[in-house]
Image (spheres, rainbow, N blue to C red):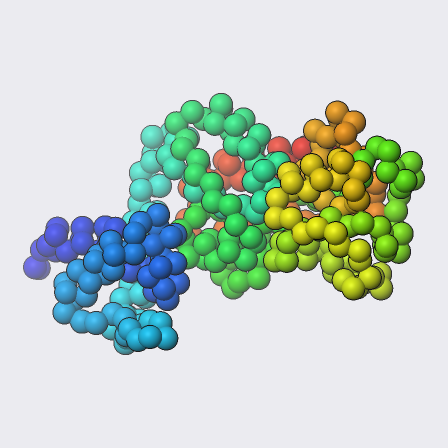
Length: 312
C-alpha cells in the first residue's frame, strides 16, 4: 500500500484548514479574522495557499460577498471531520495523563461573564492550575454560533439553544428583579407588578440584550408594551445601569445575581416581580463532539457552583 505522505496530513490538520473552516462558516473573511484574532490579509493568504494546494477555487468572490464553490463545499465537509478528529485525538491523549489540564475555550453572555463565571473560573483554576481558560463574551446567539462552529468548547447562555446539533443542559434558575435606590418611593414594597412599573423612570439594557428581550417578553405578556414604559436611558453595561439606578434616577430590571454585592452593601434594593420572573441559564455544547475529561469536569463543577451562587 502506498504510504500516506506526512506533509499532506500536517497540511490538512494545521491552521490553514481551521482558517478555511472559519471563513466557510462565517462566509466572511473579515468576521473570520476577528474570530481567529488575526488580520484579514493573513487569513486570506492562508486560504489562498490552501486553494493552491488543491489547485481549485474554494470561494467565489464578488462585491456582494463570498460563497463556497462545489470544491469548497466538499472541502468543508472533510474539514469539519478532520478538525473534530484532530481535536478528539489531542483530548483523548491528554486524558491518558490522568491530570486535568489544557485550554478551556468558553463563551458566555454578559451577565454570566461579569457576575457569575469569574468566581467559578477562579475556583476551578485553583483546583486545576494546569487549565488555561479563555473566555469570549457576546450575546447568546453569537455564542451558539461559535459553539456550533467548534471555535469554543462550551457556551453559557441565558436561554436554551436554538440551533440543531447543539445539546442544551439547564444549569440553574436566574431570577430577574426590579432594582432601585433604598430611598426610592417603591423601595419599601415587598414586590412590584408590571403595571406599577408603567410611568416610573426606567433604565433599560440596549436592544439585542438577552436580559432586555426576556424582560420585554414578560412585560408584554402582562399587557405592558414598550411604548408604555418611561425609558430614560438605554445602557449596554450592567455596571453602568447599577451606577445610574443607585443615584435614585429610576428603576431597572436585572438579574438578582448581578446585584448581590450592592444588596449586601445596601446601595440598592431588589424587589421580586409579581408574578416572579425566572429564566434558565444553560450550558450548550455540540451533541456529537467528543467531550474531554476537562470539559466534563468543568461542566459538573460549574453547574454545582452556579446553582449555589444564584440561590444566595
